[in-house]
Image (cartoon, rainbow, N blue to C red; front, side):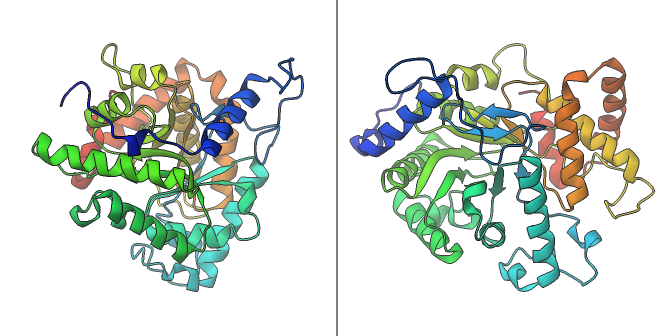
Length: 371
């Protein structure tokens, strides 16, 4: 991969309102008013709760809750009385009244706890959460990635097709805009630079155009490839405002050549996915009244506390399937600064068990033990 690539005028140009909004956000973060004097009144974060911590989302000007809501609802059947195909992800979920009540209740409890971002990473999640946020869209930031219409699939890799997919998604979900469009890059190996570069250029051009058109406020990518993610931030720093990548309860920062060096240099917002390693951190099945519930709640809090000890992480985004789980991770935010050696020892034992039972289709998570 070359160190520098020419960027076309299409990628560089921005509408004036984008620049102005970025400057306004920067001024708010800096606490400076239009006259240049110190502004002693800092605007409260969206859906503010005094017991929640808020962190800057890179250079976006947004302050996001230190733990946010991931889009997945795995194991949600343990909360429902009526059968539900939780693996279908078809978009028909909005027709299941009990499931939708569960999602609406979780959103409500998130807002009450001060959690102000939800990440929807496929079509079903976008449909469900846009519906659950109806009438309160201004209370929570919405992250968007309709992965079936994005770069993971060859037919959607051009800027034209990516923008077409975005338009379809906004229409289907009845959304005027999204706060973050983070395109999902391919998970499989890309064999050559000749194959890789068109994927990159298509994604970046689409992100630029969508922002220019006012359909997205901020842009970024998600990927399971650490090296590729680092090069994307380095090659296209203007467009990589927020990135998503795995950060589990045992991930550590590399002593050299760390992705976080690049993240910090470019002031990029980071959402950590898979904080519970696809629930492999837990002993039970997440059902209410499970004999393992107390232990698993403690493990969930330990994981969140550990992840928050890295200040470069804007927020981990666990999938939460009950209001009790929302309360549990919110409690972890209040506890993380007291993380001690005894806690770390307990977390180490839990993550040893986590890695031991990791299924084969999640072996790729091991590549993220060091970042």
